[in-house]
Image (cartoon, rainbow, N blue to C red; front, side, top):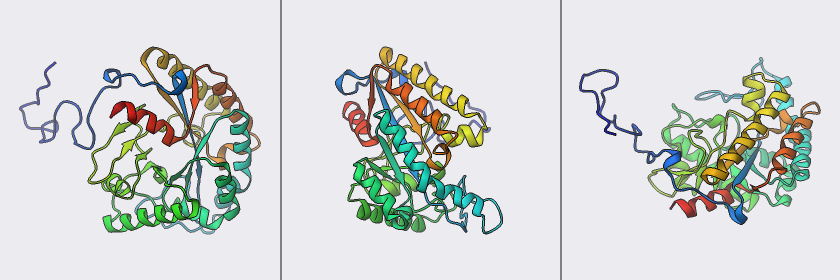
Length: 312
């Protein structure tokens, strides 16, 4: 098939227009054209569960943009502030209990400021031995257009250096608050040793980015079945959310048996799904996933390493 750029001047006629991507940040390819992946021990469906541990300031600046989930009422917005705090004090324990009962290993995306403020929570997570990803400084530090490059560089450096100091982990992964990116974010996190980030949702398998320095890959982390998107943004019922996750698991497992390894990704936010009236739906989802034949529950880095070693 030959792709021809329209000759007539207009909105579809510009210098970067070509078959595939209109940019050079990563190589374009169709999922169906790639060599099939395989996971350890003959498993076909990798399960990547991310639990965000977040700090929402009571007086967010919202610069250059407000991250979803932040305070919305006049200061002091104690209603929303204490609900977010509830997740780190109460909800997290229910989520961890549900994950452990289903033998599913989470990866924690951590706002560095939270681990500074909450040493007991930090120690609880560290004692589990699970992987910790960078999640910027707080939920009031969006990496978005309008943020000066020097300001964002300092933010990335501060967030990662302090998180590594607090955890003793290398911190290889990254999730931006709100999944926002400025034009500089991928280059800045790669320069600070981040190897994979979960902000882009345009694929279901890892792919490599072109960055100024370092080695950065995009790792999938679905928005469509994330708890906040489904329950808060789309106002679906808990039963509907659970059905959607189970349906996604079933379809991806079927695809993985025919087309090669797939990844089921799921975000579980403690202040939202750690509520007494919601946790049973989390338990149903995790029990369903755990009961599937061919599932490999692993950390983000383990899935990333297994995929990169086959793609490179």
